[in-house]
Image (cartoon, rainbow, N blue to C red):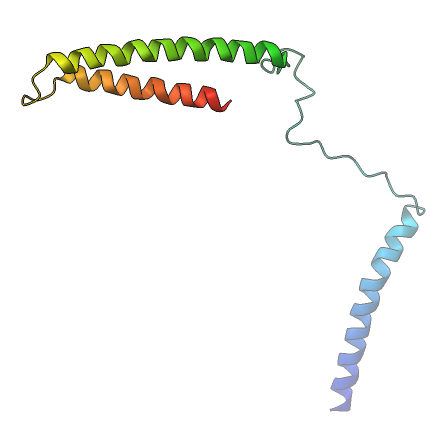
Length: 126
């Protein structure tokens, strides 16, 4: 039984020494000089192999005041259009009989007004 224990001990010692000596031997072969680490490219970086201008439009940085003025003008135009649509809908509702069913054009006009009102709300938020 002692013989099997000895064999097991020597086998484990041999494996441990082999695992320990492998890094030391590889370090001696490279003369202790490690190659410099290579940088990893960012996945969000533009592709360096694609020529400039070929990878899509470049983001433009606009003047904040110009954008604000354009949004304000668009907001005013949309509010004017919304007001006109609401007055048209009011006239159509006044002309129809309240006991009769609503026409499809009234429902479509109301949907258009809702859509435009949502656009105005989104523009106003910025």
